[in-house]
Amino acid sequence: MPYFPQWEVADLRYERQLLIPQIGQEGQEKLEKAKVTVIGAGGLGSPVLTYLVSAGVGKIQIVDCDVVSESNLNRQFLHHTGDVGRPKVLSAQEKLVSLNPDVALSTVNKRLNQENIEECIIGSDVVVDCVDNIETRVMVASACIQLNIPLVEGGVLGFYGYVIDIGRDYPCLSCLGYDKAKQKTPVPVLGVTAGVIGCMQANECIKLLLGIGEPLYGRMLNYDGLSGTWEEVKVEKAKNCAVHKNAETGKNGEFYWNGGK
Image 1 (cartoon, one colour):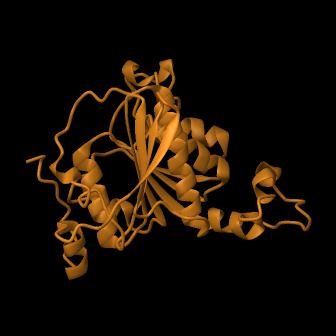
Image 2 (cartoon, one colour):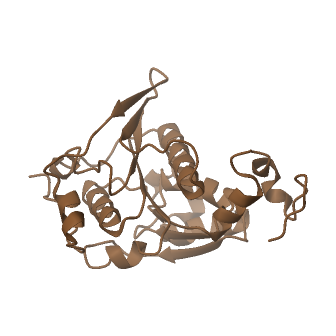
């Protein structure tokens, strides 16, 4: 897409972000050439997908095997009352195409497992994890590390949430003990909290795609909605992390979770 000097752009859609020195014409072209896989089209996925599509990320793959339920509607704003019972990937795609038809949106309507996770995310420049399932979180993080794909991870619980970036040379969820965590369902969450964390995930994704700023590698940013505060916690790679050991020895495909044992 051609651009004109002095911020006179061919598509006024991106005019305001082109004015940002860290983006400009070169950055916008990077976004248009990028591919992002977003896993989960729910409470976190709704703001992530909305702002990545609005920013003009060229190719976005939406992965979700669930259907819209009425209990989703307090936080998953890509889905409306009339979408109840529809596959989330189709409901989300419909809204996002209307928002920006220039973005190439693809969908994967199946449950991720150890047999298909690599095929699903390979070729992505960044993966954004927006699920509420510990097993899937750990499996995605493990796959991204082994394939050396940057991962933006986020989670919410009630008024609280966190964001962290994960890479092969940086701590992962297993380093933090998530592979030993027990799943609690259903997860209590306020829609506003999911919106805040999802926006931060989208911001981290754009930073990684453009190579700007300071990604949250080795830093977990924790949000407390009740006190209105943020806390940064520095984390380190665990020496005995099986995920990193598998990546270092080239044992691709061994994406695991110990079931919280």
